Image 1 (cartoon, helix red, strand yellow):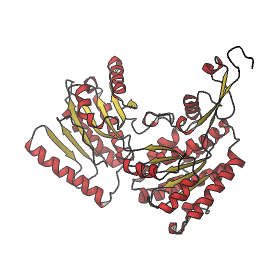
Image 2 (cartoon, one colour; image 1 turned 120 degrees about the vertical axis):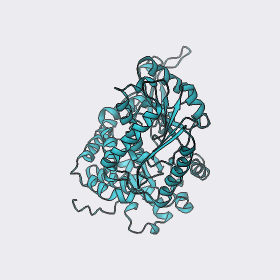
Image 3 (cartoon, helix red, strand yellow; image 1 turned 90 degrees about the vertical axis):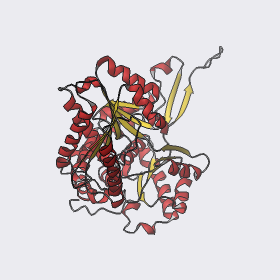
Image 4 (cartoon, helix red, strand yellow; image 1 turned 135 degrees about the vertical axis):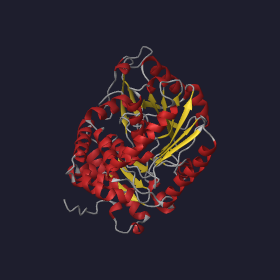
Length: 464
């Protein structure tokens, strides 16, 4: 396997994807369903969790051939530098432990064996009721974007629900899901036989019609327009879980601007900007910094620029497509002019490249970043001013990275929660959610299942 001549197990292994036909897609789905009935439907949750955790450990091994190939081919295929990709893989696979996966099942389903048999959690035992959770027989994932984590997470969730899975990757993004699927098939061939990976450009109506005709549940990530189009073309009765456009920001309380705390907070914020080059929905577009601290928000922005410059030496962003580089250059030019005419705007950026950019503004209005390590720092008096600035995006915020301490941290977290933020975490952890996190405020595993309730006693005086 060192040479990594991968066998043609998956449709994504086709040398010419244009040869893919609706009949091939339909036949692949039917084979997946048959394999699921034979190899997966009756497998217990504990053994599936053990298999996933062991596979994750394999991917953390520098000698693992699939990881090596991902790091060799990933930078060119996905546009991330090798250090950025390696750090991202380490964070993702490092989180897939048995403890974390067991916690996910217990959190979303109420019991570690909820998918294995009819049984009662503590609260159900008082009502003489048992329940079993069922995953979809055929689960289809439509991925979007270059980040591998969402697609890999979807596969893990599908394995836990014992579903046959077809992963349709966006054009040019199948490398990591394909390598992960091959690694699964090598160590757990029966599980791997319940998984298909394919890649084609979105909007191929004939292929998607054949795929959706076999689906029980479809998950999709992408723009709101993409999700609307997919939903429109699904047959009646197919469940749809869409994950659309979401944005994130950071918030730093003025107590964290002491000479002792400030460098640590700035370093953590820089990590949030650099992870996956700021391209995930959990990455910050802006960081709100309170006034009134030992150091001013402008100082935070200046130090953040220094951290991003240092980070570029250790974990370079990598080259950008021409259009993305042009977007960064255009945004920089706008703020250079504004900074030249107003003390309320300042700009720091990498010389002779578009590698990183920090824009400081007094204006609290939230601005959508062009990403690729382009970050806004906004000065605010308090959390209410920050929320007023973000109000236009209320309902579309994914994560707030929070830097505060003690009672104020609890107060701020409660305020963000009441405002509608589905996830709050420490600054520096924005792109590293637990496997048990509730995606967009919904239970990621729980949303996939349906339930059977068994009422073991009949009320109104009748005996069971």
